[in-house]
Image (tube, rainbow, N blue to C red; front, side, top):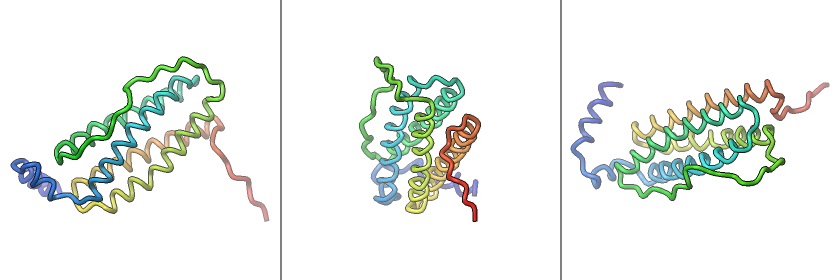
Amino acid sequence: MKIFKQIQKITEYGLSTRDRQREINVSEVFHLWNHLSQRYNVIHITNIFKNFATDDELKVILDLGIKILGKHVVILEKEMTAYAIPLPLRPPKQVQCTTDLEALTDRHIFRRVSRGIQSFLPTHTMAFIHSNSAKIRELFMLFLIEEMKLYDKMAEYGRIKSYEITAPVYRN
């Protein structure tokens, strides 16, 4: 597999943008653009949540999420630039909140972020399934695995803090 990747890199090195565009399909272009657009939005929202979080452990988890998402943004921007795919509009890098909203509790922030991760896991999976390019599939698989690991950390944090939503016990 590594030999194939090296051969593919050498082959891609001399390609023009037009030739590269012929190597990906419209579905892959959509998924790259959608992932980047969503990453921008999630980073923006997470920065807002981080301003209202009071628990230091939650702040660490939010920072970890922002770091992972930032890494994804760099990868996606690089890929999209290589294929000359227009980048979506980027929200501001920093967010300053002037109001202290008591409604944004650590529990609410945890649940919003946790549900956000849950709802995006199928998006990674569908992007993986719709990709013909091994390189693009590998990218979406990496995103899925990293998101699953982050979700696992969130789930453990939620269990420790009793923030998770638990279903009632069913008894016969």
